[in-house]
Amino acid sequence: MLVLEPDQNRRAGLGYGLAAYGLWGVLPLYFVALAPASPTEILGWRIVLSLVFCVLLLAIGRQLGPALELLRTPRIARLTAIAGVLILINWGIFVIATRTDHVVDAALGYFINPLVTAFLGVVILRERLRVAQWVALGVGALAVVVLMVGYGQFPWIALGLAFSFGFYGFVKKRLGDMPALTGLTLETLWVTPLALLMLVWVAQGSGLEIAVNGPVLIVLLASAGIVTSVPLLLFAAATRRLPLSSVGLLQYLNPILQALVGIFILAEPMPVERWWGLGLIMVALVIFVSDSLTARRFTGQ
Image 1 (cartoon, rainbow, N blue to C red):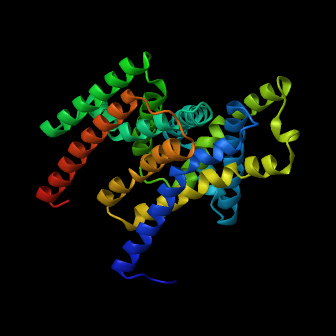
Image 2 (tube, one colour):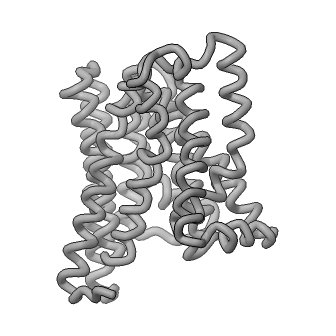
């Protein structure tokens, strides 16, 4: 077995992390390429094929039995079911965003996510925030108000993604050190019946596009499990090799790339309120990240 030196280990972790967040950052282009298929069909196939791919990987690694055995523990069964519903909601909103010219709004949601996580820590876990963290939350809230006033409607895509992923992270934290592949397998297992119902509903309505749109769409949709699972496995490899502070900074690569894709490749409109909202969110994140790094430096973490 190859043992890497600490510096080599960190470089490998950085490579895995950049690859994971880079793939997540350009993921909107994959869903745009599935254009003939409806968001409902895309979501259904993504869940079903993610489960198939994960089960295949676990079976190859002879870990499928131990993974399914975890469901005998009521607490794990309950938490993975909740996580499955939350990731179903998150994936659904994201697919809708990419198919309705709201990729930049999706990016805003993932920019807001660290602030939402801190907010949930206060509300649910009764954690105490430092002054700078409260300032960051206040600026983030102001950004939401600016977007709401500018759009004339509630920014449900950005906040829906931020809160669904925030609650998902909270549930995953309660699950402890469960391997990423095992977690995704159990989560998608719980919601696969819903995904199959979605596909049946689409088939009986407008019809499944995968059956009538040729080999390119078939290959793209069939890749949904790989597209979903590979970045997650790269992320898991990165977290084992990098300090949490490094992983925390790398996470911003995802929404940055998504915003660039939305603005420069998909040519989404950028009215003034979007720029103001994005600017305020960036200010909030600079305050939040700077305070976190300063706190770690003083506590030696």
